[in-house]
Image (cartoon, rainbow, N blue to C red):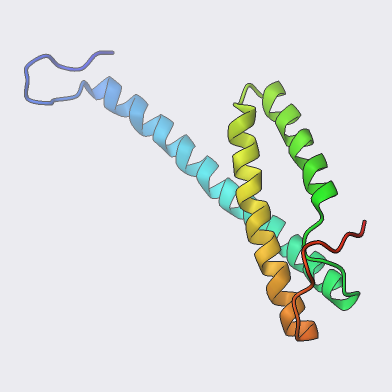
Length: 119
């Protein structure tokens, strides 16, 4: 399977078919990732409401550190760059904390300080 060297940009039909197959798999994986993130955020919204009801802080740095270590280990065993996995989790956690702050504000009229610590 090679591309044509005619200079016209023609792609060998076998290459085109393989690209289409691989891209379909990528599209399916992307859809699964989006659905998994949606489920994760449904759970974290419930956590946010529970924290707000009990006036717990939106962030839990100790849990976040444990989760980062856990995700880095999972990434290594899956042959994924642990630094990338950590950045991805940090992005998600920042969004979760933002949601928890909004929930706390709506529930209690105030945002708990991030320095509050509870487990």
